[in-house]
Length: 233
Length: 406
Image 1 (cartoon, each protein chain N blue to C red):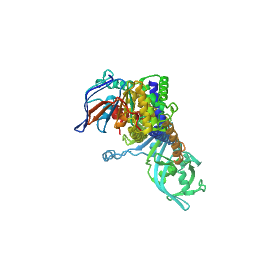
Image 2 (cartoon, rainbow over the protein chains, first blue to last red):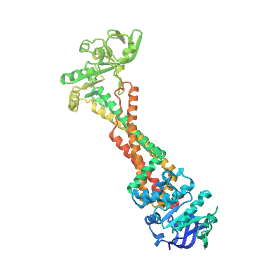
Image 3 (spheres, rainbow over the protein chains, first blue to last red):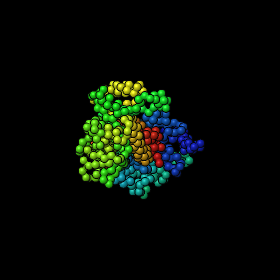
Image 4 (tube, chains in turn brown, green):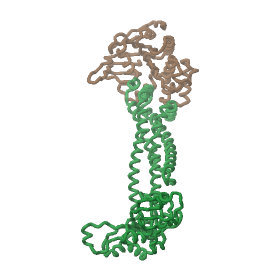
């Protein structure tokens, strides 16, 4: 078991009003699964991703990640967990501007404390893996959206994380680039990578082997999709 | 890891050249302003002290003290004035001193169809030496003039021009009141020193002034030169005693040491310095606010950057270290450029002022190492402070919040 959420609540404080974003979420994700979390905007899926990614703490409930009860860990330990166990892919890529593809991919390695040579070689290998071996020294603004997302995927994989967390990874891409990214996910999944992907698009969710549906902060459906459909488009 | 963060921070700076440059500009302006202002104030001080020395050095000034009504009634009939005799007695009693008694008269000078109304000074030959004020042509008042009540006059540079223009003046006649005087000398240009314009002086022998104009032997003051600076206080006291004795025990004189005078000037300069120092501090603050503005403008981008860095594994101290390196580098480089700009500006402005000021040829900025140190230290503190502050705030946010900061 990689992820285990037990009765997770997340309540935001808006002035004197409490706004519940997640209500009593309980779910498990096994190693090697490819899970899509789907829901309308405002359903709480981004909040759920933040909690799974240790970017934010639940108001209530237990969260076990790879054997650690992470909701009780201090910030410094969470930082280490994010660095080593989780790779993030965001809708808006979140590459650092004015840095090359190589430098962006090196960042998580730098914070992991590996030597500069290892940083360089690993980043180079990862960029080759996502098909950007000839774009190493390009700056983010010299890359297309699809290429930027590939850099982000290479960065997410830098420390060989147990979990790949993707938030609308194709949301800002044209359909062909989106298809390529999903194909890359499929490929990673085939090699045993655990992936949790958030999307509002049911067609994209069909790429996953399991689909969890959120509505108004609750899990309303959790279904296995034994035969993934071919990539749409 | 430290090395990586260091290199990463430096790359951030060069990658954001505009942001780094604008921030640096704030530091440069602050540091340069402080250094330039202090250098100019210091230059002014040196110039003023030099001017005072041109006034002559080791001087004692003797005045008659104003007595109260009661004192005047008490001392009625006693000899309570500062008189020409006092000056002569001092010269006899203290032969190594140079004594210049002074009287001042208001009068009108006429030379041909030109005239001039103003102050006429009567003094002795020693005045020239004491004040370090020499004739440019002709001669100063002589001891024969004094002895024989000669109607000789020596003109300040400006007065000679007013009365004679470019015509030769030596040997020409000048009427002062209804007396006919002969011009014996024209003084060198000396300019205005501490409110007294030497070039507007009209000097006659004191004996002549007393006899033909004043009718009494009261004098206004004496200037006395003491050869040995160490003995100024001692001689000042001896003179005081000597004069009180001559005045039949009435303490009606006042002796001021040039040193006291200089310390009064120092006091003025200190005030001047504090005011300009205040302006300089404001300049530093303006520079600091410039830095802060750049930081605030970029805070959205930088907060997201901090969120992203935390998401991919940066600890809070890694973030703070990165921002510390960035802001220190900017402050130190900006501070160094500011020092160079400040020094150049100080000397540049010094030159302009020297050229603009009459007799300001020896004026120049004086760059103080302490000013450099203070300005630099302040700039680094402000630069690092304002650089680190937004980072400290942003690094406290949850990564989720920082990442989606609007």
